[in-house]
Image (cartoon, helix red, strand yellow):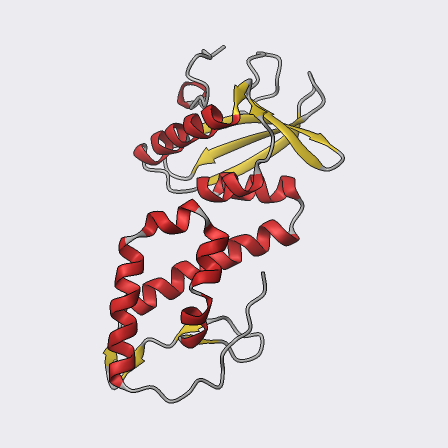
Length: 218
């Protein structure tokens, strides 16, 4: 979802910044609107983002949020959220699906996993229940002090499928997930309960977080 940079912005006055900062404050208060339909949200506020976006050439985008020594924080925050959301959709559009899904698991980014996961069932749960349980599991991971995870992936010797350990950056809590691929598409994600699956030595089995609460540690 490319977005042109706006290098030749019209000259703006303080009143323009004040009005835009108020608008951005209202947008930020209604964060749920973005999560309901992120693509629609991007399209709706594309003009506002472009108006305060500075991106000459291939340099990183920065917010035009300062005027005569005043920094407009709501503009800056809106710009950051918009850019991050835009970058996330670039990942969805340009990366292999399996790599994008693994990335968003690392980031504990549930809203973008919703954009990637299109099957009716995962982990023997229907889609809605799986997303709900995933939200609960992510909340538990964050409660334990982990805002991101790192990945160890390997091929399980038991089932010959790709196994992913998403390990909390702070306390070592982890998810153990197996991805089922068909024609380079992820058609299932499940938690293996077989003790024969390979577990890296650094993993503390007592810190596993289960997505399906009905499953028990082996």
